Amino acid sequence: MAGGRRAVVRVGAGLGALLCALHVQAACRDTTVTQELLKEGFHRDLLVKVELGEDAGGCAVAAQMRLPPGIYVDPYELATLQQHNLTKAVLFPDVIDVEAPEYLARDLLLLLFLEPDARCPRCFRAAVPVHARYHRPAEGTGEASVLLESPEVLLCCCHSEILIDALGQSPACNPVVSEVELLVAE
Image (tube, rainbow, N blue to C red; front, side, top):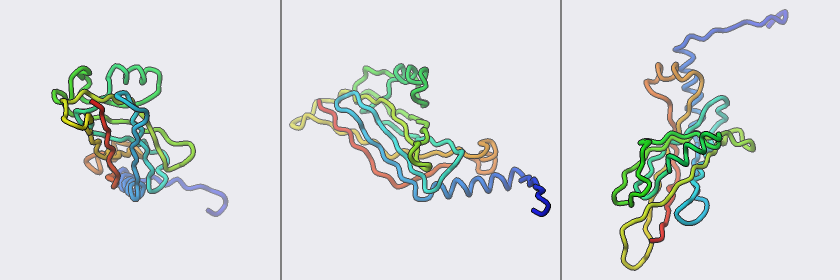
C-alpha cells in the first residue's frame, strides 16, 4: 500500500465461513490416515496418524472411531491419562463393562484428539491404550479377528460456531485408508 499504511479488511461471517470451509476442503484433499497397533497381547496401544493434503495451520484435528465389541478403551485408564495431559479423548458410552466378553459387549465410539507432529506441519498423531476382550472358543485356530474400521477425520478450523452455522455441521474429511486387523489369541 502507498505511504506504508495498512488497510484492515473485515470479512462478514458468511464469507469468512465460506473461505474457511474452502481451506478445510483443501486440507482434506489427499488426506491419509494410518492406524498401528503397538505392543503384543491383550493390552496394546492404538496409534493414529493423519497427514492432511495441505497445511491446516490453526486447525484442531480429531479421529472419530467406532471400536467393535472385541476391543475397548478402559475409561478409568483414559481418565488417568487425561489427568496427566497424556491424551485427549472422549468415549461413548463412558460407562463400560471392562470384564464383559466380546459376545456380550457393544460397539464404542471414541473421539481422539490428535496432536501436531513437530517433524511435519501437515501431520497429526495420537495414541490410546486399547484392550482385547475374550472371545468365544473357536475350533482349530485359537485366534479371533477384530476389524478396526478406518476413522473419520474431523477438522475444526477458524471459529467453530461460524462453521456450524454456515455448514450445518462440523467439517469432516473422509480419506481412503486401510483397516487394521487385531488377532486375539484365545
